[in-house]
Structure formats: C-alpha cells, structure tokens
Image 1 (cartoon, rainbow, N blue to C red):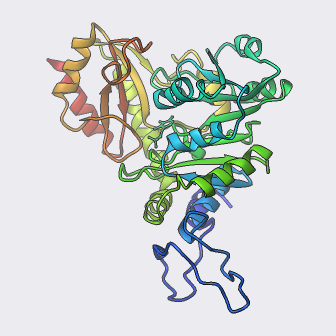
Image 2 (image 1 turned 180 degrees about the vertical axis):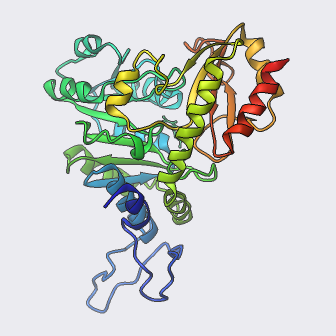
Image 3 (image 1 turned 120 degrees about the vertical axis):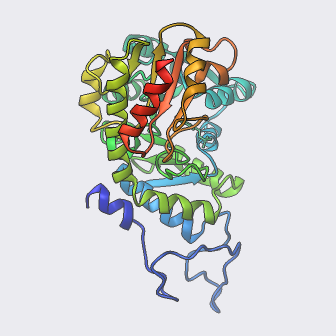
Length: 373
Ligand SMILES: *Cc1c(COP(=O)(O)O)cnc(C)c1O
C-alpha cells in the first residue's frame, strides 16, 4: 500500500465491541484475565501496552518501512531510552549541530555514567570515519539539521557505521517518512519527535524509535519502555493517530508553501541567504534530490544586518507567530540564537521559519509588510 493509505489503515481496526469507526480511547490501566488464566487480548497492564499505543506503533512501523516500533512520551525520551540501552564505556558519534535537548542528555548526564561522545560535522565523511573507535556503538544523525539545514548522506553514513560495527540512527523528524525513508537507505533505527509533523497540530508531545530489523539493542529498548514507562498516554496516541491520517497531504502543502516562501525571500533585498534544501542555491541540493522526495516547511534565513534586524522582523509579522517548535498548521518564526544556550554556533542574524498550512499568498503578504519598514 502507498503512504496515503498506510497513514489511514496501517494497524487500524474497527472496534469489535461497538463497531465504532473512530477508535475508542482505552483509558483502563489493567485488563482482565480469562478463566484459564491467560490474557486473550494480549493486553495486561497499560505501561506494557495498550490498544491505542499498539495501533500507533503499527502505523509508524508501516510508514517508515521497519519491522518494529516503540513509542514514548516525547521525542527526547525516545532518544534517551536508546542511549540508556548502551553500556558504560560505549562510544557514540553525534552531530555537532544536533537538537539541543539531546545534546544536553548526552553531555550532561550520560558522560557521568561512562559514555563517550564525539560531536562531529556529519557533512565531513572522513571526519566521521576518523572518529570511529572499536567501542563505537551508534552514529546518530539528524538530516536535515536544525536550524542550519545541513544534510547528511544517509547511505554513505550507513556504510561507514556498518564498516565499524556500529548502528546508524537517523532522526527523521524534519523530513517525515513521506519525504525521506532512512531505513531503505541503510539506517538501522529511525527516531521521531511525533510532536512535530507526524501529529501535526501542535497539541501533543510524543516520540518513537523504529527499527529495520529485530536488533538486540531494540530488545533492550522495548524492555526499558515497558519497565520504565516513559510511554505516551492512550489519548496522546489517539491524537497522534488522528493527526497522522492527513500526514501525506499536509506534507505536500508544507512543501509547496515552504518553497514559495523560500523563493520569495531568496530574492528579497533585506535577506542575505535562504537555507532551504530544495532551492538550487543550497550547497547540498543534489543530495536533497537524491535522498528526499520533497521537503517540509522548516527552513532558515540569514537576515542582512544583526540580531536586532532579525528580531525587528519577528515583531512586525502578524500571521507568523513568535514561537518555538514546528510541524503544525500555524506558521511560526523564531530567532534561534535567543532560545539556544550562550555559545551556540547559530548565527545571530538567523531566523527559522516553520511554514504552516495557510494560503501561501497571505504568508507572502505578511512577510512583505514585515520586511518593508
Ligand atoms: C523536537 C525535536 C526533538 C525532541 O522532541 P520532543 O518531543 O520535544 O521531546 C528531537 N529531535 C528533533 C529533530 C526535534 O525537532
């Protein structure tokens, strides 16, 4: 089946007791045993599993082309659980421009538990190969990266990882499985903040890990998920599933709107540069065409001038809202250096845009008046 169909039907079942077409939300924390002492439904306790979570995990597995999925209460705890499945003395290679919260998890917490971490420029394949050690277990990549929108060559990184006996872990939050399929390109595990495009309405946190095969590390992940319980609630799963049914169509609109806004800004005299992988001016445009079928609404611009010039634009927009995150229907604009830790490598004149689902002409008019000043 094709993604549009999988996004609606994978893991879906009409409720057998009521015939309800929309799945009921199973709030019960516990499930009854049969007279023979078995659990006929397979469900025992809500931390272990739940029908809403099972449906969400089945749908994510299908969309990413994997064999198994574990969902979590946030994207950050999904990644943290994968790190917890490692051993003291193991080594992880991660991007120097990785998602801030996950960088904190690695540096502030797991280094104290004996994990070694190297932060590397993932566009430099030789640097990644040179960073590999006999103890390297995971190479973590985020492509495109945020907020500088650098791409990582997934197929080449998979080769490097496998050559050194490590697994390739790819954060696919920004491109979504509609536009990028890391497992098909050789990655072993995909990570998602379902909070963003998958759920798609800025109203529910969630995370997921999807694996290409029944990997030993994934058995440990599953056990940590069930024993620790950093799981999404049944309602969180239900909201995420509802959002996912329109994912392919939303991504098509995010792509079209994002490209329209990026083209407009690229020719605006007050903009120095637009960082968008589907503009031919992006230094890795060829790689974008090679490994992505399209792009989301998240990209960055460098404003001519300094932080004050960039912040001025965020004060004059009306439709674009001044907020962090991305992936929802509302367009957002953010001065990233203001939210990142002091010393972050993000240029002070960088604005990140999350182009939403409004009509593109209204978005262009909004930016035109904000840039006119
Ligand atoms: C948001 C995000 C995360 C973290 O997800 P949360 O649900 O906010 O914990 C991880 N990776 C990327 C690329 C993200 O954008």
